[in-house]
Length: 224
Image (tube, rainbow, N blue to C red; front, top):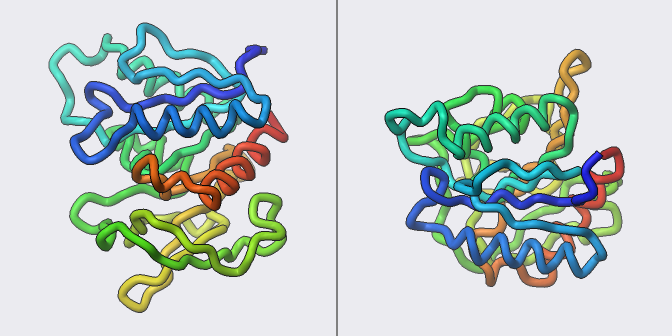
């Protein structure tokens, strides 16, 4: 078993995009988790080799179209390593744009229990908003207030599985949209995933978001 608690996969190269500061948010995630005593390593998706850890956090964009010769590339090895870890029951936390990472492999959506759908999924302009905590007594949300205030993007119209357990939702266009959820798969194919679509930029990781992150990681590592 690896001695590293958490590896944060930070979007680079194919898995970067012009809208997100993955270096900044990955660094902030690592700071929050290291303060709890966890060992954390931030790894660019163009790093030489995937780094094994008890928990993998994916903080990446959707990536570009396939690149010639990419079958041997580091980014594909990272994709295969993350999917291998998750499909073997290893815990995974997908943050923000990670619902669209590895979009070219349907197994990623099966692990997460949802995905961003180009042309359908969207978010209203980022900014202050109040969202609803709907997880009840789930260990991640137990004791949290019924509503929390954020300054962030609110993903809407994601495609989600009926098997997900929504923990935080938001209302847009009169519809309720899950923005944080857990997914444990099917009986014959168990997984342990949390999807948290918050965390667009470094300022989004204020006290409320940091508390939620710590709760998610604690739950994911409890069975790792």
